[in-house]
Amino acid sequence: MTVRVPAKVNVQLAVGGARPDGFHDLANVFLAVGLYDEVTVTPADSLRVTCEGPDASQVPLDRTNLAARAVEKLAARYGRRADVHIHIAKDIPVAGGMAGGSADGAGALLACDALWGTGASRDELLDICAELGSDVPFGLVGGAALGTGRGEQLRVLEVGGTFHWVFAVADGGLSTPAVYGEFDRLHAGVDVPEPVASGVLLEALAKGDSAALAGALSNDLQAAALSLRPSLASTLAAGGSAGALGALVSGSGPTTAFLVPDEAVAGEVADALVASGTCRAARVAVGPVPGAVVV
Image (cartoon, rainbow, N blue to C red):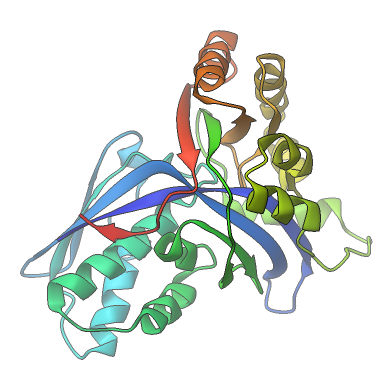
């Protein structure tokens, strides 16, 4: 059973102060974009994970992999053994701030639900996703959504059109916990406001207005990501100079995201980013796209 699951970009990531449990309250506006992993599960004698694709060597193949954890949680809930071979065909940047690992968790969960015929409800699957991680539920839902709490409580958003993106893939990854740790360091002694979704941004999404959305893009983790990886500033500048309407670090980075007006400009910006030497590769995609789906 194979499931295709998309990457995400955070068009807004508003971050509150650290909570007692170590997490942060968020107002996280997700948009699913057309870069995909495919997760295939087949019956096996025991649980194992394999992976292929760009930077596959960086993907853990043990039980720390979110796909493996998802399968174990579903198996435990339905009283069966998690004896499957999980194969991940990667195309979402690894450790790139586009929730590739979380997507794989959602994909494996849906794939095993279909393989085993558990008949789990959508709400049950979303509950398991939320147990796995803050970004995992959105991998199942896709489209566009506002995530609150630590990002796992989703409200689906209406989108009035298609948005064109270019993603600049950096060398190496950034650890999400390290970026949040740097956010906390940068805000030590500062009263961090409660995170709130931008009304201007939500209206731009609803109208499909790329120019308005570009003006409202924001990421409270961007300063922390730039502090840990200062070279990302050059990538952001290169994309802006090439004709992007707006730019930001995607999630915790180090992938940078550039909103462009149309497909033609997307190609020009991608070419310019690669030529600038400030990134390893540039990928073009559109959003929103559906969440995890059996193929």
